[in-house]
Image 1 (cartoon, rainbow, N blue to C red):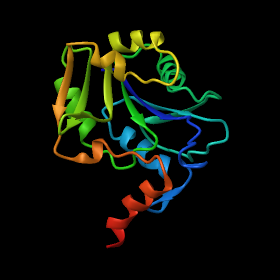
Image 2: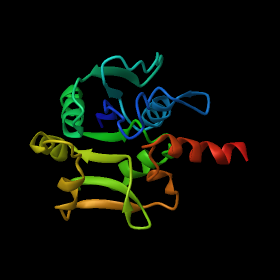
Image 3: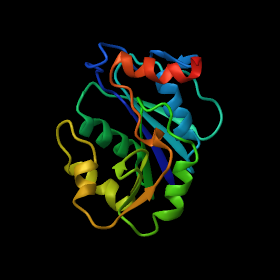
Image 4: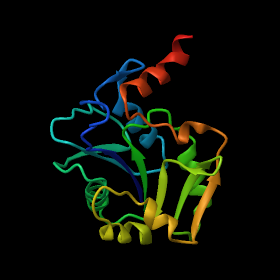
Length: 190
């Protein structure tokens, strides 16, 4: 399978008050945790869509990490840019740059259950989480998205999406405000 992982990291972080993805979390910039999770997925390469000026560091080894800059804050633009950079792929995992605790084993489990479905995603207590695995058919549909929306609406409208119930709530946890980061750090200090 020729699958890719896409890390969306081009937002402006208005609710956070600025440079969220470079903010240190457990000893390194927040975005690096998402990239590490993406690299643990069963993929041939990782594409990181960033706003201009965001340094994600060097990533030697495999899978290769390609950085694509985008000067748009719209989530749909980030997703379309990542899919376009992926080129011909059998599917794409979508990770969010502000979700540092996504369990690394989740992506492989999604790859195991997607079959011929349009997409597969984890759920925790009925709530959809990340990463999302888009089939090649789903990747082709991403071009229809507009504005500040991801693939959620597209996926909710379909009955051929696999939902994998996950006990780990970290598939839901993102960082929107500085307090969110403080809350995530607190257990590590206690």
